[in-house]
Image 1 (tube, rainbow, N blue to C red):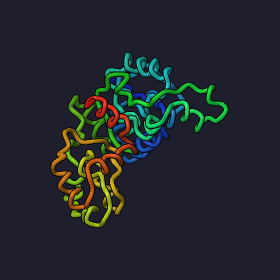
Image 2: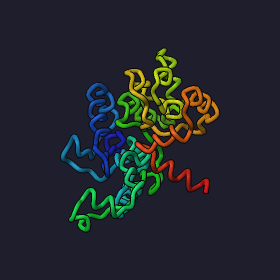
Image 3: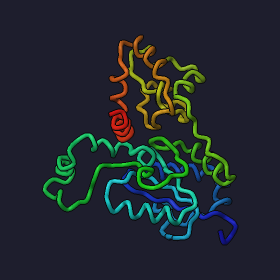
Image 4: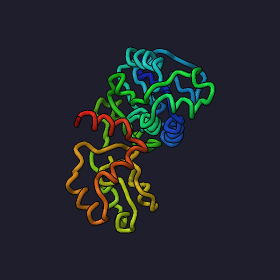
Length: 253
């Protein structure tokens, strides 16, 4: 912090970089953050690359052996590491490949050039290095990003909700999608998105991950009224939560 400002760097692994674009979007309307921090590395926004940083935001999942060395290097340099978005936080959509034999996936993606590319089952970065905080979502919520950065600068715990999306739906007086004959993952998905999908009639797909200790009994009651089972709704979590579900199944065995 040569100028009194903490140095911040952004990194990307296997991802679409949509969360970093959301960061750029948020900075356009919160210029005060740029007065409080110094961004030294951010491929989406600048060509300079500074290697001296205290806070690292990482988007994307770990999908190659060589990714691990780079992640450890970032961890060794940074005082604080933040998983940015569903891929870094959960493994995200990339982990769908974990549901199939790896050699089949390699052929589907790379064809007759499969042997050229190194890949292995996708994992969230927290499975490789210690993560100090996370910002969930696909993509992240730009206002939540701002709140997390301000909390980190103040040395406080980032204000990530641990209650379900259903709470936000009720606050917005939305009609429950189950009552409309749709299947929604809101009862067990972490809130913080302001229930954006259900508010526009689209079912929650669980991009923010499972809430801690989900109330499965209450969820079973909701599903029973809709003629569904827990297994049927949990299977939909593979869109973003394949890694977590497989880890959960392994622990139960």
